[in-house]
Length: 216
Image (cartoon, rainbow, N blue to C red; front, side, top):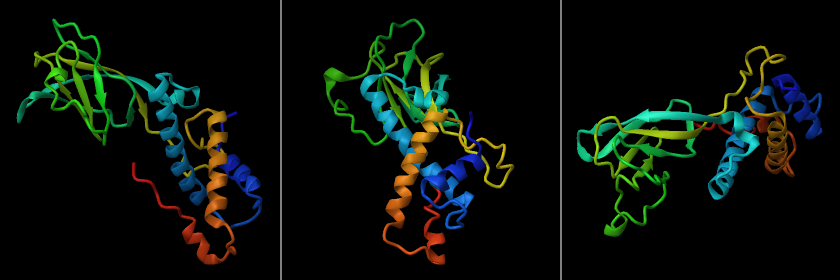
């Protein structure tokens, strides 16, 4: 079955042994769900990068892409391309350079240091170009061609969450498989107990349980 918001909420209350309590609202549970979903995806992505295998846990978020690049007018060594609006993580990238043979396209992730940046023996080429991943766009280095160059591969999309202000008895809580939703719920239970440990459930706790909306 697919988890609706109501079903998910009631099951979560049951797991934290607060069924029938108003200590945490549906909206607050949805905020916690978003936080722990992104945490879960981040850990899954680390596995993916180490094994090069997509896990079924986030398979619905795995999508193909093809981006046509344009020359950066401020730097002729760079080709730029906008990432999809629902992009969260660049899974794979392969440069398609007209008239050239590309063997491997290296991805440098956001926040990573490119240790070969100043190594003349590791400069990007048509055969071994390099893609720098930024928050909303990518930059390709090494192409000797400026027109018709594409980057193709797969990326992980941002998850889609249900609307807590909508029809919660039919609205799907998040577009992930049931077994993934259950794993995330267990993370939420742990997080909830850690945040409320040794505290009395006072009215002021309600505000603390907002957990902060994650900006994505």
